[in-house]
Image (cartoon, rainbow, N blue to C red; front, side):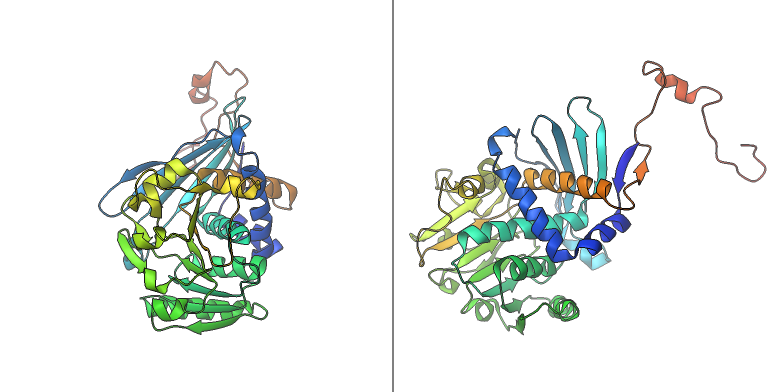
Length: 356
């Protein structure tokens, strides 16, 4: 039997902790794994692209546990009532190869993305940052807001989305959350939203080389949390922002970010720093008050490894953790797999007129 976390179960686990605490604990889990970066077997994700989206597999292993995530990205899905991103994942025991956990990761991906964003910003944004612009008010926006409010103390939020209904949704959800001390303001444009912001988070979904932020919008000292660019041909920042002499760019896993991140627009020798180096204190997240810092975040498999391990621990430790599925056969004789199909082992569902 394999532990199983479906939508109902993840709702329970998050609800019992509260979303802010869940994100905080997940951020600690991610940080602890990035601090043992060298122990992991790492590779860029394996992607299958089509004209309408992408399907990806994201593996990572520390030699004891192995994890992978299946995830898609189809920006046009919302037009037919479907999610842009869905995901599930598996955590397995390396010694036996047996799966230990099968879990939804659609909701969890949004939680871990917010956790990673806030984790990086704590090292890269100016101390005392209190104003954030949030460009793109879709599925990720509430999670990013909660993370930055709780972990960085954001108190003023400027919103903009080309889809006014997405902003309506976000404003409605944030009002229901009643985050203490948070002021929420609608903006009429991206430029208006970023004016005066300490942190700018971009979480747009279009699969194209978009220009969400232009050089004229960027003030000295800003921290840019660029989340939406996450596959080849999909970016959010004008390349000249990256070329500024006062810019520092931090990525999760450089070989993957060269393919999928904002830096895909620049030469292969463009200098970047990996997040693990910043978290370990081997490289600064920010060099000065006026430096522009960019977290070129594409999402990396190690974050999903951390999330799956965290989920398994709290799933097993709390009431309801007995939920399992019979994904792998349990045999008296492991060499007799066919025995599962032999007479007396096959269980047929009873139907009217058909003996079980």
